[in-house]
Image (tube, rainbow over all chains, first blue to last red; front, side):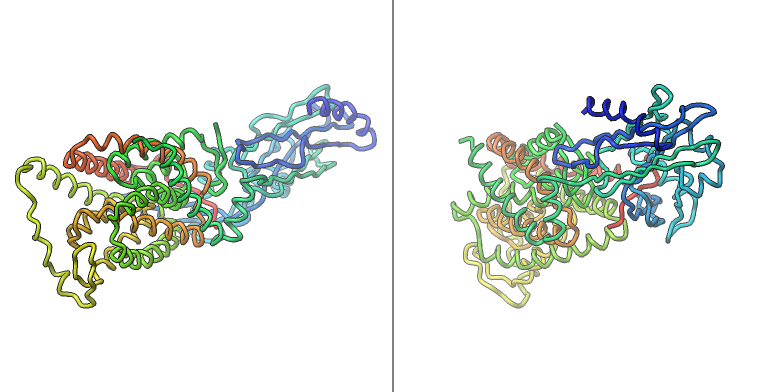
Length: 244
Length: 302
């Protein structure tokens, strides 16, 4: 795969002559099998003009499928710590990563950055219902960051020879299956002049996928299979390991 | 070796799970219990979401109890009629328990509620076990008065039924109620409930000890199967990969534990089991009362 990448990277400048920005992904599919421990996807490409101070700059944004999150705060009730007030957040990306040759806030005017949702603070994170305290938003940001699901300028985009750029997107084992959208923005004199959009799919495959699908679509059948398998395993095991 | 659990949606060390299964199986073989009360809290401790830990714990207990039931049934130690009445109550109880569980989950209180159930139930049962066995160790010479509970309030109730194998002629209401209560606890705590059922059968129903173990195993197998079913259908927490890994270690461990348990005296075993039960209750109570590291938690809404 590395050889293929190299060829693509070498070809890229040729293509770039026609376009100000060319970008590709190392894969269009990430398989979640029972041996899945996370994976990383490479975003790479090239620009028409040299990258660097005074020239072109690149910002890469990745978004995973949106979900609905509930943030709860624990409160002390009669000496016990129970879940108390909660805030609901709708349509929140389950995965979000942003990185640039420089942080986005240094490359773009604030209103452009906010409008394009470039940066964790530019995500529209307002609770749809429940507690309104800004603490909940802050807690959501912190917890998602700790899980490695929301990444902001963890490492800058790598530049090679002023033309080629690449960024490794680390996907932890907890990524949600679904469509992941990647946008690469080319910034020239504090303006987005070109954008390249790509995507990849995270999909459960093999046994893990079949188990999850059966459990979701036919829970009664799945339940019966679980009961029979557990009973059989217990019975067989007791024969295998009998010590008498 | 990391393995991805499809329902828990996380990656865990498979050997750790087999190891936990073995340890819990060893202890349960030693003490002659299902071991669900140890397994479910341990799973939560290593980060398995509580709804998966409870449902898969029940599923694992089913597998761990099947061989014991077969062995007891061969020896004719199962009172099928009494078992049937208990299970009838237990099926209702497990259904009600899963409704309660689903309600608590919606309210975001599952973790605390499961912990609280453990603290209260295990605390009481553990304390009773330790007290009873300590008394028994000190007065080993004196035989237990046999007829003490033979004619309690339970015998004045209507709907009497004859249970030949237990040599009882009692109302079906007490066994139904006992079965129901154990069913609820089984569904919420992810246990088989044998350690609660056995004393209830002896002291509340007055069953002879010869059929208690076999009949309780029959109840445990039926109720964990029904908890597995309702949990899978309503909450969706049964992770078969998790269950099978735990069983792989569990069935091996149980055989080793059982051969060792045969060499221990009854009272000492019960005192140790009581201490173990109390220990789990105290550990969960500690988790419940100490200020959490993080005040906030995030869950994905179903």
